[in-house]
Image (cartoon, rainbow, N blue to C red; front, side, top):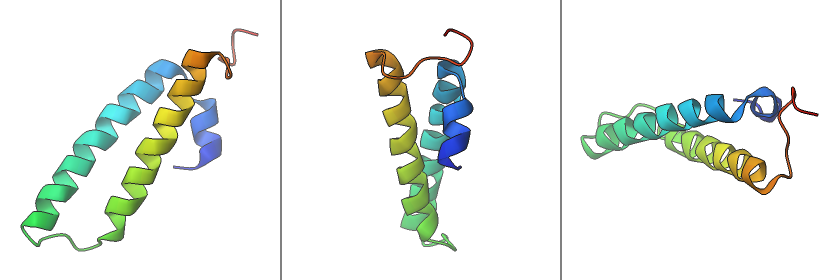
Length: 71
């Protein structure tokens, strides 16, 4: 997911995406432990995306970032 796409999302959408990514990361870790993971770089990309989502969510909490509709 591109950073510009994260900027367009609302906090509720970010929360849903975060939960989806955490579940996907857990599944990839299971696949890795069973040595069924075809692309190990997926883990790295997914962890980076989770970190980006958490950063944007924290910016909303701090008031650094505002929703597009509430200017």
